[in-house]
Length: 444
Image 1: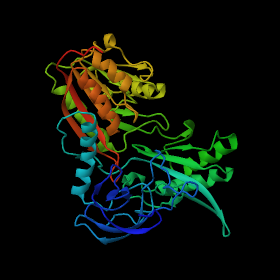
Image 2: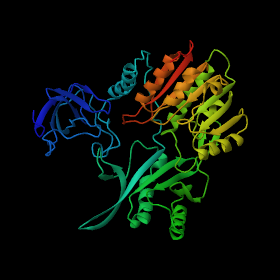
Image 3: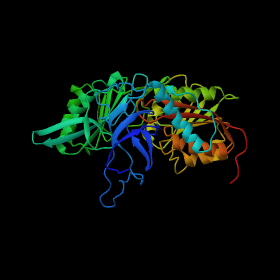
Image 4: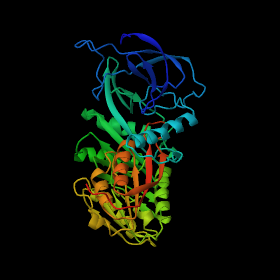
């Protein structure tokens, strides 16, 4: 098989990123937008002229990713995409899949990661948490110049490319973000003349659009006046540059349980409102079903409080997070919300200074929801502790499986693992794992 050939292949299975995989004598070939059972015509990239071998991927492996030319025999579960930009825009990779195929593929990604880590625990069915759509979006703003002149555009990047695909409408966004592309373009036209590419993050809140612009650099006084006028004209709740507040016309609120949080500009939020509610429900249900009443809980990597504020309806909570601004937002929401049990906060880098067993043993339950890198250091300390109940939330199946293995090796049993889908049409999946101490931590 030559790497610069046009080939006809049969797709055997789906890969972790949603690509169809065809097995060939030269190894697997990955075909975006293809489904198992399909016969497809593809082209493969030419070999690296310096070596005569296949181009190398970013992971150092031979790049056997093909470009789909045509589907010659379609699978029965292929469906028409809902967006005219599908296959051009890099945001969605699965709009061609039926719901059944999509749900099984996404759940299987969790099952596979756990199996590789040596964890044999039943995985619950995938929970759909897309809801009304994503409440936050980041548009890229670019100034493009050609023979016809200058064109300012906002949109998403093409798959595995730096090419901008202009976007006027995105079907996976919450309706509250319907005007977000036009607003982003308006702001881009004000800022792009400085010549720097922009990332414009827009969040739908209870009081309107909250926008944080990245890539521009600090705004001068003239730019601040211009942007303040734009925020008034566009009726924005808040506008900031690199997290630095330009103007706040109304506090941008995010409901979290009984609380109303004003998150820091550009701060982390779950992708969808239903996604946050679903993850929090699974966390609180695990605590409510614990053999003994949960009186004190620790919420690690707490952010601005999506779990802490809900857990405080039933127990005292100690929230630990490295971002002081997020903790300040949580504390303000706690103090403004009647009927909650006490929430204390601690600014601490849990990667460098995880809570130790002596600290952890004060709690009846520990919840942790780390970034994609996982919580390896903290999981090792939890495994040495005697905390009766641990609830692990994750957005990465690989690091979740690694941390789960640490807990099970330390004497915890996985009682339940639930995959949650709030990133529709993407390979990303959330997980909530409930772990119960059944024995003593093993000495190493």
